Amino acid sequence: MKRITILIADDDAEIADLIGLHLEKEGYHPIKVTSGTAAVQAVQSQHIDLAVLDIMMPGMDGYEVTRQIREQHRLPIIFLSAKTSDLDKITGLVIGADDYMTKPFNPMELVARVNAQLRRSMQLNQPVAEHKAVLETGGLIIDPDRRSVTLYGNPIELTPKEFDILYLLASYPKKVFSAEHLFRQVWGEAYYEGGNTVMVHIRTLRKKLGEEQTKNTWIKTIWGVGYTFNG
Image (cartoon, rainbow, N blue to C red; front, side, top):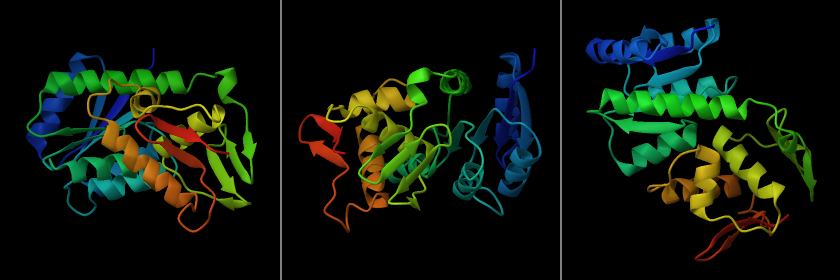
């Protein structure tokens, strides 16, 4: 059976070794690098199932690493950082990370989050008939197989989470989804305080769909209830 490979990118060797030790105990194969550049090279040169990234690394920070990874890969990314503000967390999630933990951290909690992200990734990669349909409405085309979105023929670049939110909403037009429902469906985790994360992703989605410049409202807010697709 093929071992699951997890990339650990952290310029603190002691932290990387600690994470690697706990992941090995769980049966994973850890690969450790100490810079953002090396992290990108590792993802480009071999198969990586999940990445644990520090944000503050020499040469290239974790944000830029995530941007470059997301250009070609959909592997789960967990930020593990000393940056603790809500803005830092939201920035990391909006850029394309799937989870965010702050230092100091509990290694066993990190392992649990790794397990959760890998389970979710495997579920999403399984063929599901209802997720194969290309959705078209009012000039907006959402292709789940290619993970692509075009609006009046123009490609719209979305992060994986933005795409998942849009596809879910567009799959059930006029149905109202609460922030909690969206978070559970898209992130595959318990809600806790995910409302702000959902709100930020909805805001960036609207901006990318050009709602600020046009009168079209693809995603409608039902105040006090949630969001619905208005296509």
